[in-house]
Length: 533
Ligand code: SIN
Image (cartoon, rainbow, N blue to C red; front, side):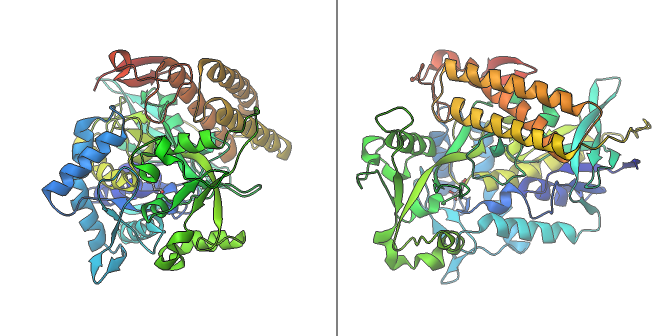
């Protein structure tokens, strides 16, 4: 069965950016929030450490700006960072008013520290479940609004353009529900807030929904992507055979955790004066280097050590992490915890201005799916939840101001054929191959030859997926196609940036090349250019 419908505003994604935008948009129209699973299942939900915000006046704001610029390794778009740190306090105060409960000590908000922050400014909730609290409070507040509607377990398969006298503009989207029914929704404006793409790598802290769908949808529709070579690898994910790469929050190091090599020695003094609280890209590469054995392929264990902090009541401060570690017989107060880096956050994404406008009229983006340049080449810890709040609200205001007309679509929709179990098994094999190739060839340390090998695998995966996709659709197929497209964007952008900067490290070009590359990469189709903004 297929259906046609229209709303004023379509929001793709129910993480912090999408929910914050929906609340704003509901002031003026009917909003449909589409999400692939239940509203609670987003990357936002899994954010542990906290939300960085400078709530203690101008000096605090100036330092937050300085830290954000510093972590971004020369490439932060300063106006975006200024907006982030200046509007952040208001957005967080509003969130508290709407019901978010951050942890307090003696009635005052408790602030902690993380890597590359010059002072403690990270708010947290329920110890290490900050994202879940933000997601819960925003979802409750949004759902109370009669103009906000949710389409859960629904996948967006395409963005559709309508011609206007001025230009093509995004005017509708096709949605696939859990019964594989296709529905076309027209909207005055569409916001992509569908998060990141950690699933493009075999090792990731991201949940299974983080497949870069929003980025791929925008790119397919013709929008420009920016800075796709900059993928942040979180330094400390749990490293146990057969266990997922569970995130061990940077807040652990904020509370004093050490990193130890296989000889039981701290090593960060050899890499950065801020030691374990150096910027994430530096710590992640240091761990990778310390874990390399003498023979190719040989690995050495690196551990996180909090045993000297057992007086902090670690189980109370980090209840979620403690509970997960207990499942593996590990205890922060007693044991060394084996760790390794894992893909965590995409600094790049759909290129937007400071109000979420993409290069396509009618299409907006916010949060991890977007690239305002606010994080430059490496995001400062705990700036992402703040980004979602600030730029989600701004994008919504720009959508309201756009006052675009509805252009209801009358096209008949062909119901897609379902894929067989054997075809779905094939998709899983292709995805696994792509993820392993991306980790091996486009991970923390890259070079021309590895990136080209990655591109060859991606091309084979894309061809195999195209064959499966003929006349057929399913959520998993849409995700696999998105992963392939995002992988290609990362590989092409990483090949073009022949220097090392932030999270993008090229063994064959280990230095900065400011003269050529103090610029953002821009990807349209398969073509990469560099622009200063
Ligand atoms: C963490 O808790 O370490 C993750 C927070 C972030 O990615 O900023």
